[in-house]
Amino acid sequence: MPIRGYLPAGAFFDSEHVRVLGSAFEDAWEKLKTSDGTLADERNAASTRELLARRIIELGRHGERDHDRLVEHAVAHLERSRGAPDVAAGHPAGIPLN
Image 1 (tube, rainbow, N blue to C red):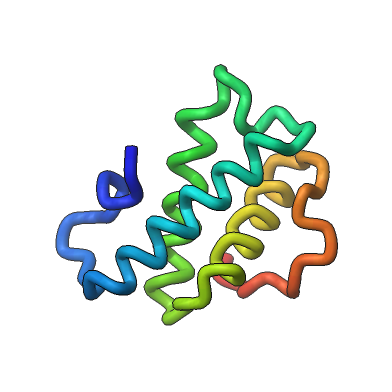
Image 2: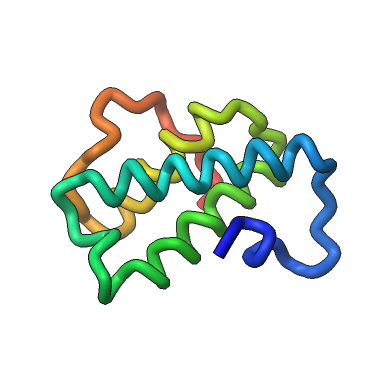
């Protein structure tokens, strides 16, 4: 499912922002799929994609529009929350939204 399917009703992003969010979502998902962790395995894929989308959308709500930072922050957040191996080694400090 593309990121549009995860956008909450009433969420407003212009078309360019949605494009950046969607691209970051797909790239973050690919990064997780190529890692050695279990976040993207078949039994976790649906929930991981949903969590990834929610995190990217939340970052977008806080004004983040940089593709690379969206990817890195979202992947790092999932790894920390699920205790997965760090596929985003060297990522920049996360945006504290918790």
